[in-house]
Length: 155
Image (cartoon, rainbow, N blue to C red):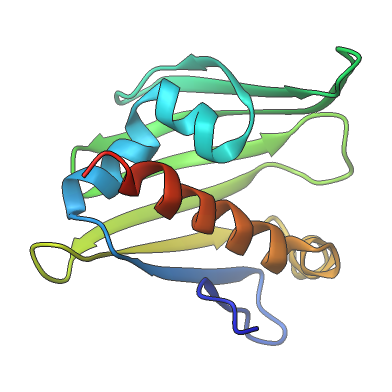
């Protein structure tokens, strides 16, 4: 099965570009990253904090069925322009992965379709390559499929 979320990771570089087209109007795609309740649904995580503003921050947490925390992520939002872009850092706590810098750009393709482009910069080529060894592509594709499903119901 072809993955709808595309990842371009050029050999020897410490960044990658993720692109995905959605059958969603631009405003709904952006809302999926802006509204804590929607983020929680498609990411399958608890949104502890989401301050969508310049110098804002966010924190996510996922627990197993016994209440044990299995994933925590946080970051700082450096730029936030509604329906256009979000620039933020992303850090997974308690992992060997260093903080990464993410540039998210949102683009209308038609009245009913839109595109997300994420440019992600890692501290080193090695860190980026280690991330790509994980089921990163499949996980991201599944998350974006869920985003399409959850937000598509808001149409």
